Amino acid sequence: MGVIMANLPILKNDLLFRTIRGERVERPPIWVMRQAGRYLPEYHEAKGDNDFFACCRSPEIASTLTVQPIDRYAGLIDAAIIFSDILVIPQAMGMVVEMLEGKGPHFPTPLRSPTDGQYGKLMARDVDAERELSYVYQAITLTRTKLKGRVPLFGFCGGPWTLLCYMVEGGGTKLFKESKTWIYKYPAESKKLLRKISGLCLDYLSLQVKAGAQIIQVFDSWAGELSPSAFREFALPELRYISSHLPVKLRKMDLELVPMVVFAKGAWYALDELCESGYQVVGLDWLHAPADAVRVADDRVCFQGNMDPGVLYGGRQAITRGVKEMVDGFFGAKKGWVANLGHGVTPYVDPEDLRYFFEEIHRLAKGENRTTR
Image (cartoon, rainbow, N blue to C red):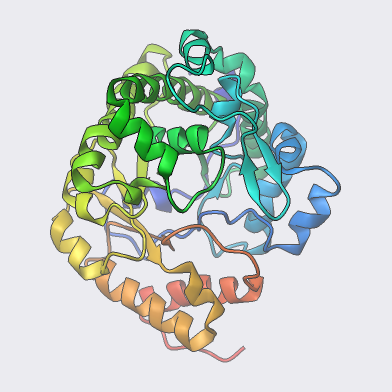
């Protein structure tokens, strides 16, 4: 084990890992995607006047933002996820990515075709993931120190298909015109680009583990924009490439293997294949009925998810109903489920409603009656 890893605090809460190993547990481990974010008032205080990517590039700010929900919800949640963004990969590949207030990510010069000049340069570029993304690794190591072993720390990357979408669309989209043009008009070039992205993701994830990440997640947020056949042709092979090559790479680096989570949002049709994709945990969005998903998985994987984040806008009774459906569907055998939302925490969520969500998971998973506070 490397020097950096040896100097980090020892983990005191292993509930997440016991669950992933398939052990029966006293309650499900809990965390939520985007738990470090703008719904928290302390986030805005720590962010100050810095833009989004400036926060990502500052190990001190990124680590502070990562730890904020662990402090606020002490004893209620069981994992932290490093504050960063999936689009640091295209940035490392040489593309300019801006985060525009009120609009989201923006690429001033997206990839438009294999002959636009940028494609060839991007494919030929040898990206040094260790140098280009060093600020992420520094943030991970610093965060591990600040967490003091209270909970494990997630590292992550975007799924290659989702990253390709951003790189060719130039930002968020509802039509996916450019993405579909690429895969259907230029399938060979698209697959080469996807594999280039996958290779960088592999380097990036392994270096996150070296820096102290104890579990990793691959976010393929736009998987649901593909048909089942297109998902199998373009997205799934890259997800499998990462899951099959990361353990090999970690062994070569003399690092311990870490659990891997895949979250292919919207790809409800591919649940059976995702259970065989090489990941120990499959993240689910709210398009899955919990009990139905459990039947499909048949103990092959651990699930993570999956309440609609929009339920958090609906008040305490709605939250209780949503949690009960998850507990009843996922946790009947007292194993195999990491409680989460079906996507990230959305803006304007009341932090106290999120606290209630966490408390209800604790209460209902243990079969306890509600006590008035």
